[in-house]
Length: 70
Figure 1 (cartoon, helix red, strand yellow):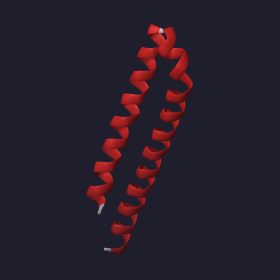
Figure 2 (cartoon, helix red, strand yellow):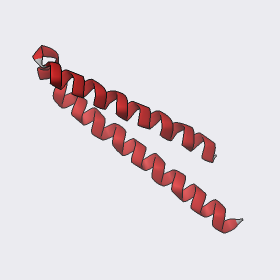
Figure 3 (cartoon, one colour):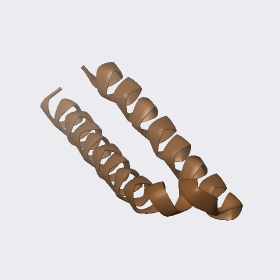
């Protein structure tokens, strides 16, 4: 079960980096794309970070309970 959450956490972290990089490139380039999508990308980054933090907490809880019960 831990390996599933570890894999999902890795995917979430890759998603955070991808959204952050896209937003950063759009911000640096400016233009219409930045004006149209800057706020949406910021919200998406916050959402992906929240998912990553939630998955990290679940993984830590799983490891804590597996160590105390065994």
